Every structure is written in structure tokens, then in C-alpha cells.
Amino acid sequence: MKTRLIYTIVSCSLVMGTISCSKFMDRDTYDSVSAGSYFASETDLELYANGFIQKMTPSASTIGYSDINADYCAVQIPTDLLRTDGNVSPENQGGWSESSWSNLRNINYFLNNLPRAKGKVSEEVYNHYEGVGRFWRAVFYFDKVQTFGGVPYYQEVINSSDVDALQKPRDSREFVMDKVLQDLQFAVENCSSSDKYTSSASVINKWIAAAYLSRVALFEGTYRKYHATDPSTGKSWQNRDAAIKKFLTAAVDAATMVMNSGVYSLVTGDPKTAYRSLFTSAALKKQEVIWGRSYSNDLAILHDLTWLYFSPTYGSRVSLTKTFINSYLNLDGTPFTNSSSYKTKTFSEEFTNRDYRLMQTVISPEYMMTQNNVTKLYAPNWLVTKTGYQPIKFSLDNDAGGVTARAASWNSLPIIRYAEVLLNYAEAKAELGTFTVEDWNKTIALTRDRAGVKAIYPATADPYLLAYYRNTVTSPVLLEIRRERAIELCLEDGLRWDDLMRWHLGELLNSSENPWKGIYVPDVSKPYDFNGDGVTDFQIGSSESPNSIKLNGAGAIQTFSRDADGNLIWNYPRVWEEYKYLRPIPLEAITRNPNLEQNYLWKNK
Image 1: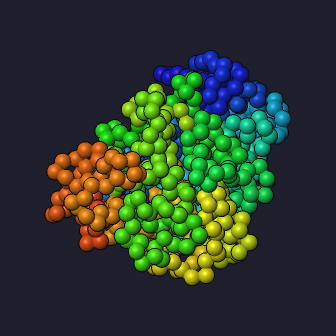
Image 2: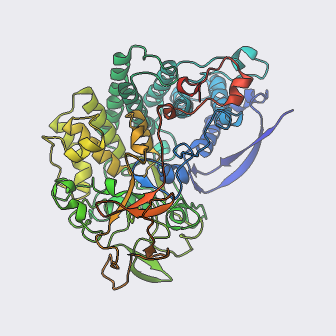
Image 3: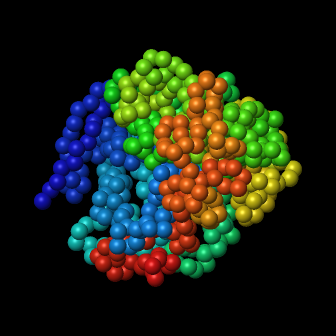
């Protein structure tokens, strides 16, 4: 029995979230003989490729909310994977159903049938769309590898009668990631960089492919460096040193291509506002945004990120931790933690002369919001925040349209920025041991200059960062790159979680080693006015309200307590174990295909 697929066809233009003239087309499934007449023109290829954009481009929640379980965030309730009572097992693991593999089937159908277009479109157009298809296949498989490790690799459409293919065992991670690298390198070489494909920052093009390649190759190269064995198998990596060099070199080469193109640069201007403008603008700032997702208030194409970050009921009540806030540098380029009094700085004091990205990432004493057409100072809401450091990076400052209470946000969202490419380049070169002062000046110095921070090339390792990263890295340069990466890319597209996974630092997710620290409270009997507007913004009392919390000295689950240094602590036990670097292969999948083998450390769970 045939099913039908509905595709949006844009007769005038289609970019993510911005549709000018559109109609719909019903088309037979991919097994239909009608494919022979469909791949007949550039328009056919474009329309099919636009389907990938709609189905596979990261959503707003992925772009701006997928790092809430990383080490620098506190939330109301942590993810199942971290909770002591969390239920993650082969019996309930998702990600392997038929629908989970449907995007791959669509991609391979496109690539398998693409030769039908030969002679009907130019070679340049043909190669571009083969690059687009291979880009999306790489995106699909990179996600699968990050989740499960080695998986069966398919580059042909599998029919329901093909028992051998359906019963195929897992291919090794090494094999799959080599295929991912090959696909992305092909996309970089063959995808077009013409205005037709680059003007929207949403249609796949040469620069998106190169930027994404720099992300993927950095991930894989460092994953194999910091994981002595493959978590899929428990065995040593094949040709480990050569593979690490191959992937890191690919990251450098891809980033270099983007940097040397002259197409992109950092958005600059007032250091107090330039950084955050990238995340609150109605239109994507394509000077820096290489790949992004557009939204529109006029077209009612909206998302819910302001609601998620400001609601005491709808979201996860996300806050950044004091441990992370401490890592923001002073404006003179020195570590905040160099001061002997850094532990006793109050909320009102710790924003003074600090990296301007801090006040553009969380509510500061200067933060203003417009509500009911009145603009005034707005303090952290203690029905939302668990530490006092309430994020605003992706949120709108005007509640017109009810953005704090419903899905009404219209700000467009970056997926990959030029800043990330600079950081990918810097880290890959540092890991290869080839990073120079010149590299510093064209990467880290640029992002710090934008934030008003003096960019001092490090001569010695910062003790605070050494301790935080458990002395697993001692290079002063590499530590500063990690600092810069955490701050510049904070809360973006799940990158911090991915960093912890590739650096083999899941232990930073343990509550015993990294408690969720909040603001310093020197006097529990005193009310605090954070922004000097004459209103109490925080106090410890007998109930919880927008400006009040209550303490539980015993530190019971889901309560506030106060540590020996006078910092608030939000209590919720979190546990990390080695087997959690990968998710288990679902039992249902192994039942259907006994040739699949469970991930090594999940076998006895």
C-alpha cells in the first residue's frame, strides 16, 4: 500500500521560516516508478532538497535549549540520564524506530536517483545537489554516532524484502565516521557558494558544509584523543594516532577555508550589545551567521525560547552556575578568580569590569525589560532561577505579544556562527601542537575584542581552570580556548554537552564533584536589592516568591541550602558513569535484528 508525502513547494522562494509564495504537492513514495520523470530539472532537485531543510534543520529548542543538562547549568529536575532515579535502559531507549531512520531513506533515495538528472542539468548544478545530499547524510550519521557509537551504514535505499541489509550488524565507528568525513569533504568541494545558495543562510552551501565539517572533525579527533578505547566495543581504536591527526587536520583545513574566504566576520559594535544582538535580531546577521533559522513576527513563524527561559512552569527553570560565571574574565584580560576576594563578591559587584558577554548572557544589575509598555530594571525571578544567574541570551526584552508566556518569540537563531569556526580552528591547531601567537590573534583575540576584553596570550595555566578540568589539560593555550569556547558558545546547539562527551569529562556532571552553586549570600537575614531600584530582589524567608527563597539546612532533594563559602546550592543528586558516554542500543532493535550488538558497557546494565 502506498503512502503519500506532502512537501512544501516554494514557487518564488523558500528559506527556513520565511516563505513568500507557496503551494503543496502530493508525491508518490520513494518506491514509486514516478521517480523516473521527477528528477528531470534543477527545480526538481531544489524542491526535493528543500524537504531536507524543513525536516532536518535544527529546531529552536535544539538551537537554544539543548545544553540545559551541561555542566554549567542548573535546572529544576535534571535529565533521566543524570538522575539517580532516572530510567534510561535498552528497554526504553528511542532513536532506532522506522521513523528514526526515515530521513536516511529519503536522502539515499535522492542520491540513488540523482543520476537520472545527468544531461538535464549542468554539471555544476548536479555536483552541488550531490553535495547537498551527502551533507545531510553526514548530518544524519554524525547524530547517530554521537548517540550510539557504531551503527549500520547504508548508502542505498533498503527494500523491505532485503533481509541481508535489514539484518546487517553494526559497522564500526571508525568506518562510519570515515564515511561522514568523506561526505562532508565532497560537499565542501562541490556545493556552490553562489548568492542563490548563500543569501538566506538557510540553504545548504559550500560555507555551511565547511563550517559543519570543522565542527564534526574537531569532535571526532578529540573524542578519540581523550577516550582511550571505543565505548561501543571496549577495544582500542584502530590506527588511533593517525586518525586523530586526520580528523584534526580536516577541522583546521575546513575552518581555514571559511576564514580565508573573506565572506564572514564577527558582528562588532558596542561591546555591551553586539554579541547578544546575534540572538535577538529579527533577521539573521549574515555577516557572522553561516547557518541559521529564520523566524518572523509578521508571518507568525514563531518559537518559544523566551517563554522557556522566563516561565516558572513551562520550562526547566534554567540557570547558569556560579562556578561557570567565575570563569568570565575581567575587562583587563585577567582572571576574575585571581582576586583573593572573588568568592565574596556579591551579585551586584561581580558584573563590574567583567567580560561584557556576561551581562548579555544572564540578567545583570543593568538589565531592563518592557512589560505593559513600561521599561524598567528587571531582576532575576526566583520562581524561575535556581542560582540567580537567569539566562537572557536568546530571550526578547519586550513582553509585547506575551513572549514570556507563550510561543511568540520572533528572533531568528544562529546554528553555526563564524565565531565557532574560529574556535574550532584554534582548538584543532592547539590539539595538533601547531597553534601560534598569530593564530591567537586571528581567533581568540577577535572574540575577546568584541566583548571588550583585552586578549592576553597566556604564558601560564590559570589555576582555576586547571582545577575545574581536573588537570586533564595543562596547556595554558588549550585551557584558554576552552574558557573562550564555553563563554562564546554558551547554551548554543548542544555544543557544551558535546564538548564534555568528546573531552571525556562527564564527571563534571556529578553533583558530588560539581554542585549547582548560586549567588553569594553573606547575610541570610538581610534583603538584597541587586540593581539599586529600591525594590528587594532577593531574600531568604519562609516561602518562595519572585524575590524570596527558603533554605533547607539538610540539603534535601529539590531544596536550596548554603555551603561553607556562603553560596546558595540547589540540591538535586546527579550521577555520571562511564557507560553513559553512549546510549544503549534499544532492545526492540536488537530483537528485530539479532546481529546488532549492545554497547560494551551497557551489556550488564
